[in-house]
Length: 341
Ligand code: NAD
Ligand code: DAU
Image 1: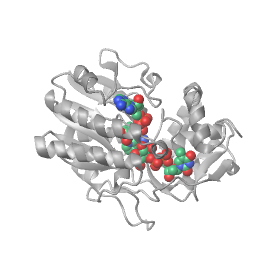
Image 2 (image 1 turned 135 degrees about the vertical axis):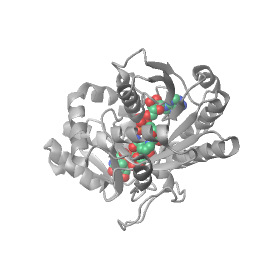
Image 3 (image 1 turned 60 degrees about the vertical axis):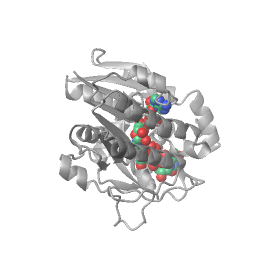
Image 4 (image 1 turned 90 degrees about the vertical axis):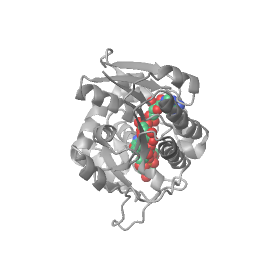
């Protein structure tokens, strides 16, 4: 068995990656290490083969817990664990520094101590800041760091630590930088599942500012296949941008969603803009396409249809995540109740 230590595997992308690994080959044995914060959900892991998947509740910023959980002879650590929501980082950056920065360094130290063969850092296009609105510029692997939110700054800091571990200690590291994921099991604080949940309940959808911000959308399984390709075939020390060549304005995203759900555009509400809101992300994925022969399988239409179908069929999952602490978060963030019309 090839052992992989996945962190944050009870979250949105991490759980999709765990499922992909188990589906792709019988060779993998996964230790899934996740603190189960508000974003982690054991329901995301139901039905997995227990002979090849072992869940441990633990915190990547807890050195003893990581040392105890990480076995020798691991093929790879794949680090998904993070505080991942920009708006929450604007309210308070504390947890972002602890998990995203300190946690990453602790994992790097443990990887060296236990002889892990490869360290995969799941990073984000947001470390490169915001692009001009000219439709002609794209993020490449050589784009300079320019993180604009506390979240992005913490992810950039983590990347620096990964780079330093490679340069100073010769640790085999690879970094992936992806854009906005969408798909099943995304926590409904993020724009797309929030909009789907609200629209399905005939509630208004808050659109920040003028709605003209551009994000580069990718179906979560396509992102995970790209991470797998980088884990298996990426060059040591390299950064790989991951994108499906699918940049869209937020307004267009909500409108296509409302059309697909058969809901009126009048559900859309412009609200106060996010502080420091990055205007445009667009990724040039040429390197991963050429070097690792990776391509996305889903189009925007097929990915969105699958996503909407999943939320329709899993209303219980959605309503469970929208209860309890989510209601307090929503009130604080949007100044209205989660189920206000
Ligand atoms: P998520 O918020 O859905 O999940 C994060 C997971 O990490 C949760 O299961 C949570 O319990 C766990 N976690 C948080 N703090 C932890 C800690 N201290 N120790 C152990 N586990 C902890 O996030 P996501 O959207 O699935 O993102 C996963 C990774 O991918 C993140 O590193 C994020 O920066 C990166 N990323 C996300 C996107 C996106 O569009 N969502 C795009 C590019 C990169
Ligand atoms: O680009 C990759 C990043 O994408 C990841 O690194 C982050 O973890 C992930 O959260 C995501 O960040 P964004 O800030 O782009 O995603 P979010 O879903 O929060 O917002 C998408 C866009 O929609 C953004 O322009 C802000 C806007 N938005 C968001 C929310 C929550 C709204 O207009 N209204 C909202 O209520």
